[in-house]
Length: 405
Length: 165
Image: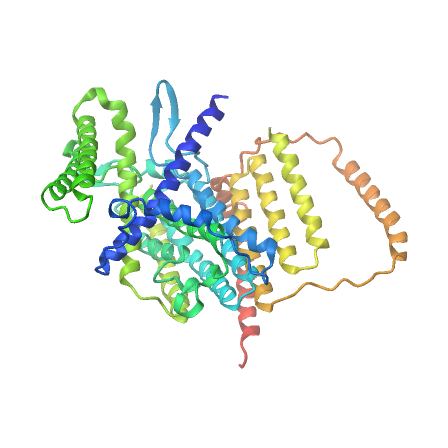
């Protein structure tokens, strides 16, 4: 019974955090893109547009769900449902911290630990193609169909180099469970270089990491591989005929997939929740310093040079919240009695930090790179990514076979 | 709990299988087949063969069926027309089917005898490590021969797909 109650609590917590992150990821994306393009971005709803996600949710919920008369109804409704369920399901096997003990109850941070966690995610991605393909087909619209077909062809092609790129760090880790994979990346070389897979002997996985990130862009249908929804060619691709909640489902699926692929990159290549340098060199003081710097900047701007209408109130308030978080982290780093809190907060900080940097990379690339042409996209996958991934896998297996015994 | 899951997913698998045959639209049939594959993956999972379950999901439900669906969409195959079938063949066919199923189950029962009942999760040889080991030691020759066979099939498909020589 304990197991069920515990699982329910964890599921509720993770679902809440995930959905909030999804909503605010979209806010961050709009803000970052806007600043890349020298625009202010959303700033009408709430201070600096912070309540914009909420307004978007209300808009999408209350909008009329228009169903065109020419669609194939059962599949038209099934597709967005399939897409969002499969995308959200993937989070359930992703761990984001070590095993912890709260009030005598031992539990793992993360919903569950499958012994084949990585394969489960690969299975979900390969089945997730159906959401997009079916949505495009059921819409009975040539743009939507072309978008769906492009998307499925692209996802099938990029799944191959992605699986090969993921196989190389698995050779080093010798397991398929995320928790054990992260476990093999614990510790440091020469006392400062982390044993993350991208640095790990006998064969650092830098090439595999770059390959994985490139294929992850394609798997999530994002710029420069966003051919399925290329708006100047296909209107909006597979979701042309979707409105209101059904459109929101596709939208959520895209952002949830982004979070999944960046989490996998963090877990497999970047050492999961382990800090980038050892505690003895003061890695515990990085989070308080970062939060304190952010809080101080906000406080300074709010007090001395408020630009918006409410900036003289909201910026200092957020600055003080950040300073409070900084104080909490600093307390964790210094006071031994806060050790249980430290064991929860710091892994989450490092995991969220690494994933966040990768997510920022996704947004940054979207603001920077133009779109591929379709033949370039396919040629790139089959004549460049695939051979490089195979060579990398062969080299890794060679070095592992020679040096591991 | 395990038997409950088994019954549920076995029922889904059978229902999807029947749906696959009786549907007229090829996309519906293809999706039903995906349903069958997915339920089979859950059944493998219940038995404790996690790796095989996931491979079933990745290879069959994912890769192979995506190609099926892809081809159906590209060919734009519509729903097949129902033709009025004569009822007389059913008169002969139904009893024959019953007899066939009865005989087949009798023979199977005799052949298998009183085998041990299935214990859910008792099968522990289904991990990636065990399967990899047996593939590359005990079954190395069949494994390599199969890969050569697949290579030949790929080359054959490419030759057939080329327009001029």
